[in-house]
Length: 190
Image 1 (cartoon, rainbow, N blue to C red):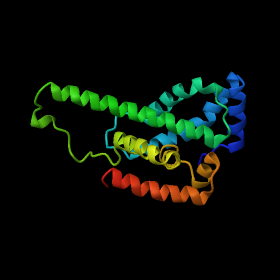
Image 2: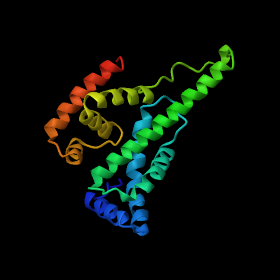
Image 3: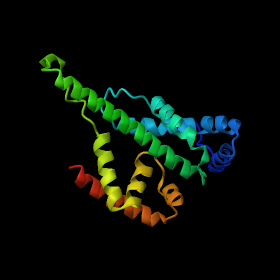
């Protein structure tokens, strides 16, 4: 079983990368690639069957968005994964928006034969756009709760990692997660 990278080594590599080391950037991506791919895979398992986006594509697109972030002062591993989670969320939301737009274009083209209607068994477990909109609404009410949910759901961080990333107690993280989950379920109609 592959062991997760040491937090200190990721933090050191992030600092070297920020200072301009291309070697550190390459080593960093090797170290975090597997973990980011695992996060993306876990998230995509919540999607409908036959989802067209693969975990590697999510990670690669997020990586392309992270590379220009060299000027960011990465505090630690949790901070990096927090930013990576935001990038992966944007990749997934952009993909869902493109799919929705394509469906509207097809619907505008005219009627569809009954044999072309997809199987309703492939329902979303989580609708990315609905979750994105609900998180945006939650952020307007309580930005920290929205960030806690994002770090847990999109970055897969543990309670203690979220607490360290946001510089709050684990009890506060748990309370925020509970409150935000109830609010999001109500908001999303579940």
